[in-house]
Image (cartoon, rainbow, N blue to C red; front, side, top):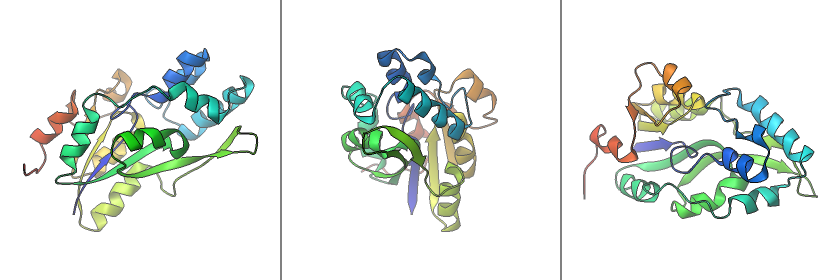
Length: 200
């Protein structure tokens, strides 16, 4: 099978935490894995800040309710799915990402879960059972699937290196510095120039 493993935030939709930070006025929430690659520590800090500033899960959802995928994302996923099975492999959370997945046509998604208590406070994270996104790709490669991958941040680099073809889209300067020889693209549709693809 041919499978496309695509990150969500920064690739198909805007980075959500900077939007939450701007709209809530909590500047520290704007830090992402582009700048801070230790995601577990980053999420623990975010959860602390949400509680400290009285933001519940329902408040986060309300802040994001008018956000849409990037203009080319829906068309890109639709075209890519003509030749590839789509796997959204992201460190985002189902509880936040579900509306965006709906807009993208509900591709298969491999995300984490937020742990929320009876009062709607975010109290923790339930992580996908994988050691980085690259483990998802490596398991597909072991099954002799042909895998392409697209990401934008530190936590995508090993996934991109593990794929048959990996692409880093619009990376930060810091991420670009650690990318090695991974091809860098500015538009999703550039991917079609480099992958096996049969137009219908």
